[in-house]
Length: 429
Image (cartoon, rainbow, N blue to C red; front, top):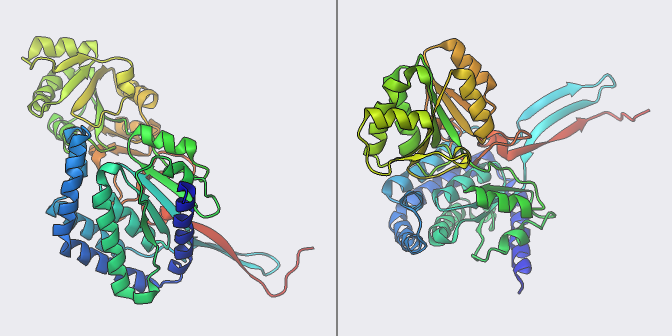
């Protein structure tokens, strides 16, 4: 059987399952989600065994420590996956929600209602928790999902999906659609273009991962793609910042989980506070083994004011300002005021997440209004750009597109809509 034939069967099964899933009540979907959550926790030992194989594969592939951290499943992360499923179950079901309603002069009544998209393909790297997050959100919104993780996470992803499907069947019996959650069973790269050529079965693709993966998917796909290419996120420390608050935000944004897309890649510091703030924040960053790629002003200031480890400061190249490192590397630039920071972000940023730290409301309002990103913060870390942190339950992805969904995507963003017309014999003249 050819690869295209295999992917066609997978997609056909998903389309059939999506139509059956659309018939489930909210209560049935929630009951299945709770059963899935319980099953993930109960099978934690099996999940960790599968993940240990993937961690060994990842190490053999030469993944960085930050990427291996994304791949790892432990009791805390398994509990977080289960918690995410329960949170999705607790959220209102958007399917069937009336988005608009009007009655025309001829008496024709129209309703615009939220409906499932149908079949959603999720393509992602490392992070096996994405398997549970994506599948649960798709399930709640009546969408069948086909999951394609990286080859380094195949064992983890397969066991997570099998656990969720088995729990759904236990909870709902024959009402649970057999192929509503599927994992692409091959690591062959050609499976992706084959699957994404099937426009008659697949309705949407959402890639999650590095820029290379996302661009490759967007270029080969014949179905619509919702995406963000990369997360070049910024923190700007304004002249009127509380420097203790700024230090806390910068450290959280950079080092809490540096391999994720909402981690900061560039720190901008107002020249009015650079002499005071930069030595303090540099010392903190070096404690965490963060390499600084700095402009001339930053390099000169730090070299004259603080002892620093060898190779801890590297001159920043033009390309560095555009780069998503996903690692313990941070660009630093000294800028002259809020307008210079905004101009830098809008030129070099990826329209993902950017933050200003200041007690000056006028400066903050200008930053919030003029930075052209999906999420813009005042006195908060960029790490909050996440569906769970936004109260959406588990997250399906983050979009920097301007048409359709933008920012963290949850249940509402996994719905499309249709119009219903209620007449009494009206015909158009």
